[in-house]
Image (cartoon, rainbow, N blue to C red; front, side, top):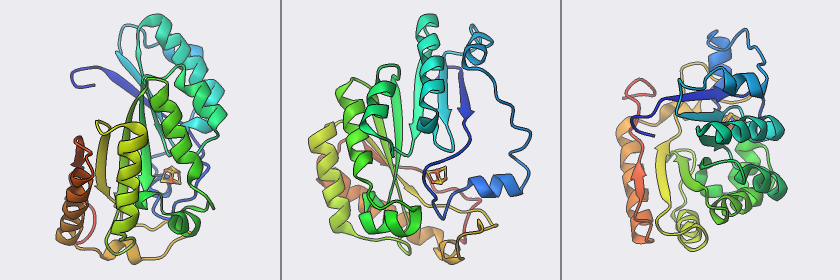
Length: 236
Ligand code: SF4
């Protein structure tokens, strides 16, 4: 997308309940307010000529599947590129529908899809549908970019990470872009969580990411890289 003009639309609501979600911070800080629902056709038509790409994120965009498809279908008519950012937790049928209209998909994984972590921290019993959805997008020709958020004091399992990277290389392809990032938090915890996420020093998080990046490269993911750690969040 470098050099392109992109509009990114954040859709409300989510089907996960991550304890580190940043949305409650933004709501409490007043960054999210006065949300106005705009029809998909108007959303696109009003931006023709002023954008090269339209992206949907959230919240979770896939729970608004019909809206996203209507907008992306219109984008295709106008030659506007399409980007979907998702947590990946959707049915195979939803992934199949979205894949027909989406050029690029960013899927945010947490803790290498560790089943017990998803149950305890994200509120779902089985992250299996995320793998299935990623595969559907890849098989339908979408560019799939995966991010994997982690933190040494929250989750640290190199075996599970090896399994994840092996699966990506095998099922999605070793050229898949794979970004490793820190779980970051602001200063105000959401109501359903505790304070533990604040305590990891930045240097420790950086070393953790670099160690995991080495594993990803060893598992043949040639396009693995680390997302820079924000200097504004967390302890030094
Ligand atoms: S998937 Fe994203 S938007 Fe949904 S609860 Fe988790 S962090 Fe928040």
